[in-house]
Image 1 (spheres, each protein chain N blue to C red):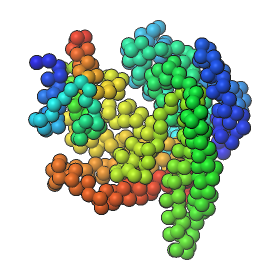
Image 2 (cartoon, helix red, strand yellow; image 1 turned 60 degrees about the vertical axis):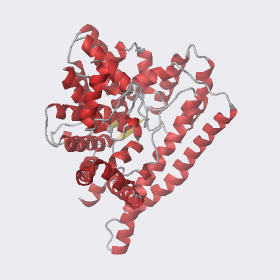
Image 3 (cartoon, rainbow over the protein chains, first blue to last red; image 1 turned 90 degrees about the horizontal axis):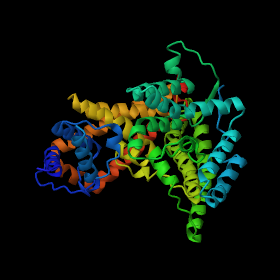
Length: 79
Length: 400
């Protein structure tokens, strides 16, 4: 299972919606419930699932799902 | 009385206005030396603003310290925890320089200077951005040099009251100059500058007069006069601040654009906001965005990690409390922050209750109704107006 698929499971879990399909270009504007609170819940869920830690600077430079996946991959590589 | 400086960086100062007008000519003509020319212009503006060389040196030392401190900590001393160390130091020194009396008088600490720097709170947020993002910017090969930091921190466009630009955005923007050549665009910018002047010197001046005249009658014995005075203060002050601040942005943003800079917008029809968070996403946008990135997100993330109950409510309260305190050093701003925090928690409670009772889909449908929409907008406007009377007016001093 690659990172984006694992991340999709996290999205479905956090948003409590099994029909969510994510893609690299997806942003908060594409999901109705993706507000700042949900965004942080996503970050924390991803940190727990992948056993990694995001810094403040890394978090605020995320622009879309593609950036999120790239950041997780980079963190996993450096683990 | 405190002595303010950098107040010279005002649109009423003909020298500052002249720099604003002439800057595009200097900056667009020689792109190779653009950063040096900008540096000289910024230094000139500081010289215009500072009443003495002593003041200028103090401003420069305070503004430029983080650059050298970060270099020293990361490259020479190799301190791992330099971020919390520098952030705490900068915030404490800022509170001291700004004369946060409700902190320092309680601790019986006296001030060594009587001067205060207008715009110092903006300088602080740029400093913290630089410190927090330093390593990330290095990893991303973002250009970091003394002259770029100097221009970022002391840019005469944003020195006084923003918009709060991030170092990364400033540098990327500075080296990707977009000089405007077509006449229509120039005309649009000039007309926005003129509308900014009208907002500041006509509309906001009139509102300022009305608000201050009414402020004197807040405690008058006649009930009807008192009610009218309160209404004018409550609904006049928010519009005064809006026209004054957004007017300044209407001058500075297009003026910077004529010189090849892209400054972010700070207002987006705040009077149409549906709750307090929405209001702050539309009002002083660059401040809200800064606070969201550096206060709200890390706090909520930390609280979620340690599984603390009611973490979203606490985060909202803390975030808005800091917004209030950042605005000024007196108790009025502390009260303003507490009020904003309470309103934000109530707003969060309202959203959560709707979701709980009506479900996700049901709450969206409920809020989509026109009457609910109008009611929410009106409530937000009234509540925001009521809170904002503590900004710029000494409401506490009037009664105690």
